[in-house]
Length: 297
Image (tube, rainbow, N blue to C red; front, side):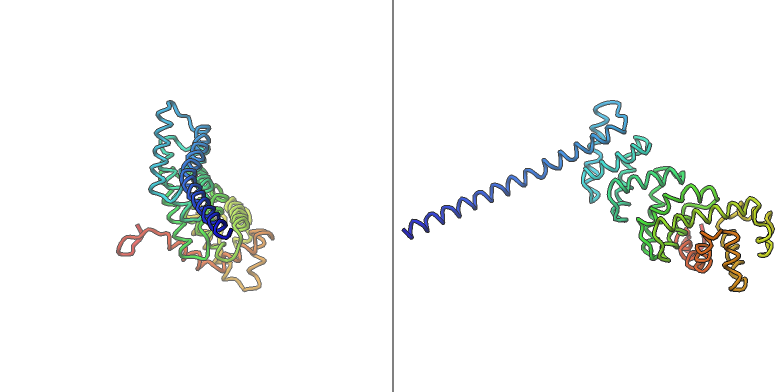
């Protein structure tokens, strides 16, 4: 009886081994099929937002995305999601592959989901009026800030997409906006609060530029005409000059002055910026393009 039982056990172990081997083999076949189905599903989303004139155009886009997946650590499904985000945001069809490549690299570097990176890149292009083929340079600048400041790249992108149109209207550059946002983030502000602070300060600076607050500017040694002219010439420099003049006041007079110019809601943000102007300038300096001799280009 024991011999028969042992024999049955051996047979059962053999069957289980064969079954596990079969399931493992099936799994290796199932994964590529599953990926192919997911990719086709993502390409269906691309087809909804991109006007392919012919089936060959569509298949060519498929091939481009799959080829890209061999060069960038993202699946075809993830890259297709980026292309779909780009197409929905109005990226020209001929720029979509390059857009996907840049957004994918940004997503990997910034630890962002594929579709999120594509949406952020398209939004930055739109609000900052930077052509898609050139947006990767801004991505490099943001990554450089993240590597050298107490701020995360994804958070800088979050702030910049919220404030992009505001800073452009004021006359500041995208890199100045990125450094401004990064400085607030470095001081511990959450992205949405950093963006809100910058928006509030931009509004107040625009009001001062328009001629309001003459008595307060006069106390700082400025006329409304001088301030408006300085803002038109170099908005960033004019803002820093204004804050430095406030810092030269007696300590007890600084916050009341900022309350008059920036309002109660944003006076503390303006004071934070005034107190951390050195850090802001350091981050701006990180983004300046210089030749091998160290001179500004």
